[in-house]
Image 1 (cartoon, rainbow, N blue to C red):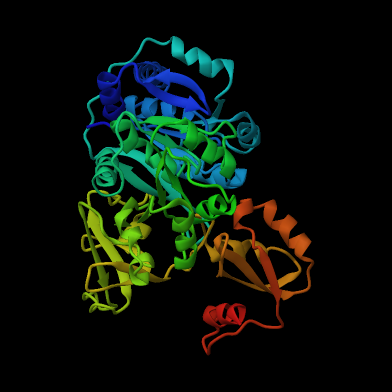
Image 2 (cartoon, rainbow, N blue to C red):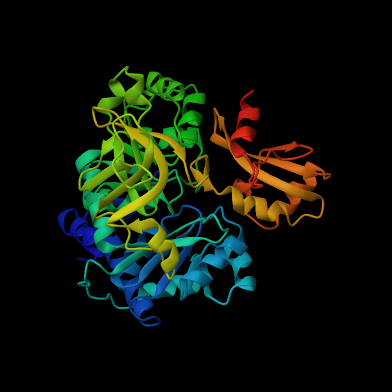
Length: 490
């Protein structure tokens, strides 16, 4: 089983149906997309052996779809890069993955080329266009356990870790989505408003399997009005959005387009009050997923039907275990926590990664006794609904993007005016959470912003700085982050 088979099936069943749109402009049918992917695959195999890591670094654009399926048809590995990352962070991922090539937009490629030895190819270049002169390759047959996607997620040490996702993992994710969350067909659409390097890109798979057209905003990014216009133009539209994007849709004051069927949200906290406002504005079209890069989009879920409930405990939960997944809450001794008691959330199933790329220590710490230890804390109720309570890994999820405090702290401490730094998250109505940095030292916030922007991605930068004389610590010298969070809540 090779994931290219999903495109092959769509092209065989719906050859002349619309496949990819840029705004309201049709780019290709399914049979044309299959031909482009196979020609591109042949050109890749002329240069790289099976198993080569092929990176993609661009804002949302149609080439991502053909590159993904071409890479799999060439029996290589897709390494999507978040276009919001700083070029140096992208270069670190390319180095860690041992990438053979990176296909990049002209803007990102111009910044990457001077700082990486990886061959950088510009997507909108003449050289890329010439690849389609190659004779189409034959569709491959691949062991389903073969690596298909390296999903990089920032680590608490400041270096990214690559979750190894196989063809089987991603097939299980696609099937679970169709079983639990949405049921598209060839008369439906998937609108890519969120970054395709993450959730929106992963959801290409189930929608291609069903022959649903892929819609890319002409802007290449998320604009609430553009998104709602597209949903009005294309049939039976679905999308994956971060909670902050849902909030921005509500803030437009516009009503739901008749063609908008499903919004799947995840990647960060959605507070009950915000969810109720969204349902009031657009109706019960929302479905929630809880997952991680290590178990992509697939741990628990809350269907659209559950969003019709007025039960705050249900709306505040992340739903129940997904099809093909076993989910448990364990105490510190490894025993199941009683109902209502908080413990670490663990899961097992075909969607779970095989480990971290070339990182056996991190793999052993995360995969234990057949379980993926998520680092998230939660509790089950008697009905099987799981509620997230805290995150033991200290990650701040802002606007659907993960920010690890230690990474930001380490960069802050490089500034000569910073004696000590501690970064925490605090709830925010628009972003879900925002990053707040407590600073001991004498330095202008604008200087800290400039310092950070030269070293890490813009979205990781603190939105607030709090200057203090000292950080609260316990007798062992560990900073008491709970006291800092409490001070923000007062």
